[in-house]
Length: 315
Image 1 (spheres, rainbow, N blue to C red):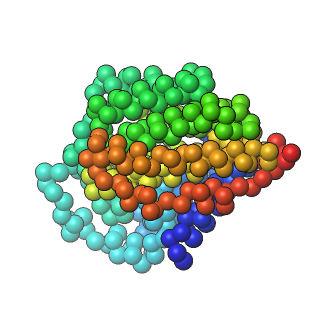
Image 2 (tube, rainbow, N blue to C red; image 1 turned 180 degrees about the horizontal axis):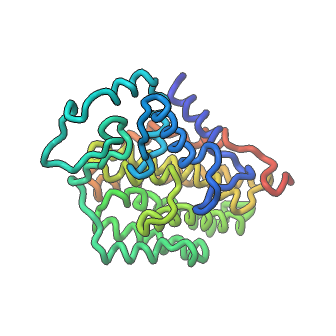
Image 3 (cartoon, rainbow, N blue to C red; image 1 turned 90 degrees about the vertical axis):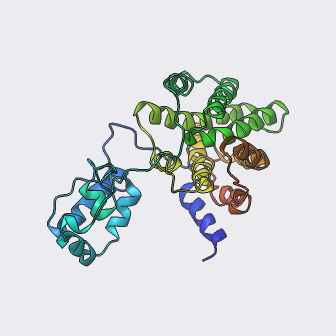
């Protein structure tokens, strides 16, 4: 299967314009397919195969790690469990490694020693700027995203890579509304704000220890991992926001059939960002991410995700 076809299939599964979907919020019952369910199922798999009680939640379970664990045959898990702990040497000067990490690769510490970190003052400012409950409109959105990116330009903690990109997406979106590009102007203005709220709520959750969706947790984990390429990290963020978040944002603003052309145009305008992002990421993070230009077919992703007849019914 070609890389392009995988992308189209991924979009078909993840992005559905106007679909009646909703994320699981903190405090809701975690049902089938949720991160907690995957982790709990992986724990049961380990126990069944080895007889060991392994608390992956306490180890900081990543659903992706848990899914890999679920795919590991019992024979492999049994062999690992029979090995004595001293057969796997660790760096005596390094951090203490949990049992789950040592044997199953779950909850392992990330080496982020090569990256700068935000100052406490900047963290507090970012918490205020990213508060989704006070977001007003597309102009407030533009102001906040610009202010957030300014902080990460001054203090290039890699968790802020996407903010550098997102300011261009937001600026282009507001400009296109002001220039009258859309048939349904107010709907598009609302979409800009709803779209940004999805980014802000996850940044706010990351900074405050609150709720963060699984795709954004993956981004924030990879962002500060010295072993992961910056292009891959940025690609995760772009895919997360322009596919997953955009689909939810369209649902938030009750996108229906009559909005389809505006939705597609909004996506095309979002792609204007690529020349700017390559230049800015090189300047701020000293990283060449020009490979992203050939790795994304977002127009096809968005087209394959159009479902029509949205939450409010077709028109």
